[in-house]
Length: 156
Image 1 (cartoon, one colour):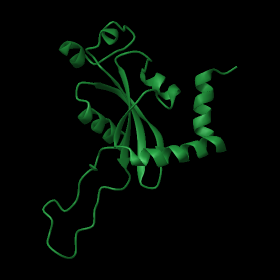
Image 2 (cartoon, helix red, strand yellow; image 1 turned 45 degrees about the horizontal axis):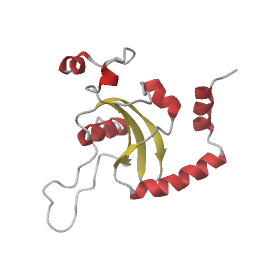
Image 3 (tube, helix red, strand yellow; image 1 turned 180 degrees about the vertical axis):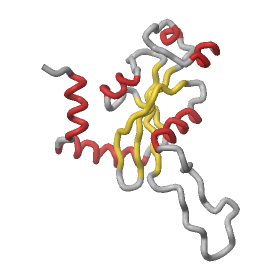
C-alpha cells in the first residue's frame, strides 16, 4: 500500500498523456508571464513537502523561469565590439536550479529559500518552483519542525 506522495512522484516520473497535454497548455501561458511569479500552491506537492513546505502563512512558492543554454557566447565578428560581449545571465559553476534560487532571492530579499525543484522545460526555458519562507513571520517563528540556519535565526 503506497501513499499519496508516492503516487504523485510516480505520476511525475512516468508522465501519462493527460499530464503531458496539460503541461503543454501551461507552458504556453507560462512563457507569456514574467520570469519570477508567485504561485498560490506548489505544482509538485510531494517535492515541496520534502523540502519543508507547509500550507500556512509565511511560506511562499515562486515559479522561476531560467533560459537554457551554455555559458559561452560566440565573439561578435562584425561591427563594433560591445563592451560586455554579451556574456550574461549564466555563470560557470552555477547550476540552473541555483540560478533560479538566486533570482528568487533577488526578487524577494526578505525571504529565505528552503529549496527548489524542476517543474517543466521546453526548447528555450526551464521552470523551477522555489520554496521560500519568511523568517520573521510569527507562524514560522513558532514552527519547531522548521530548521533555519543559525545566521537566519540570530537575525530574528
